[in-house]
Amino acid sequence: MKKSQIRKFINEQRIQLSIPEVEGLSVKLLLQFKKLDFTEVDSLHIFLPIADKKEPDTFILIDWLLEHHPNIKIIVPKADFETSLMTHHVYPGREGLSSSLFNILEPMDSDLHNGHVDLVVIPMLAFDLKGYRVGYGKGFYDRFLKGIQTRKVGLCFYPPIETIEDVNEHDVRLDLCITPEQTYLFQ
Image (tube, rainbow, N blue to C red):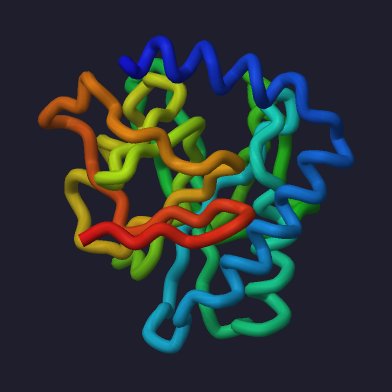
């Protein structure tokens, strides 16, 4: 399938999820996330969930990290829709977030992070067996990931599809993808 078809199909599936279903799937993602090795992770970039799009609740991952790995610096993005670029900020806690024009939670006045990031948790709609992902089509994460050496971890509610037919040179491959049932590793 092509990305546009996948986006349409998965968006239709996700929008039908109830809030309890999203919560349950997010808890299962956390159980898989806990199995990752964080011993060499000093900084971790993670997206904040867009509730309207029924994205995985990454706040439970953040809360778990803060409790079990308090030395890891948590970085969150802020999107600029005019340039399709992101800036990266130290997580200020939930009280330091506000909703943007597009109802996306973003840090208000937290410190900018320009340093190395050891692990990036990436949003997506779908992924394939080669480790390529389908996002919303704006390219924010592909641009961000193109220029850095980091471990790329996807979070997805659904198992992989066989192949994304229209992968291009700008698409960045994941190192692994976490689903509620298992973690997929890509070589």
